Image 1 (cartoon, helix red, strand yellow):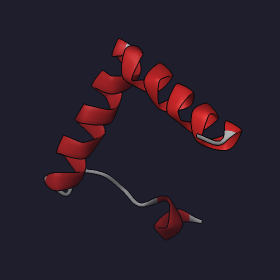
Image 2 (cartoon, rainbow, N blue to C red):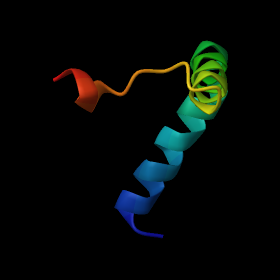
Image 3 (cartoon, rainbow, N blue to C red):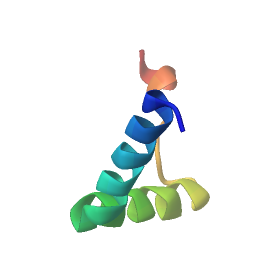
Length: 44
């Protein structure tokens, strides 16, 4: 495993270990599925 792959894996594990961030990601996915989210590129 390369150092870059290891770093990427560690960052992924940090994200998965962050309960608040995972809750936010789940909520965002649910909102996007319902069409409730705005796309940033539409407002720039």
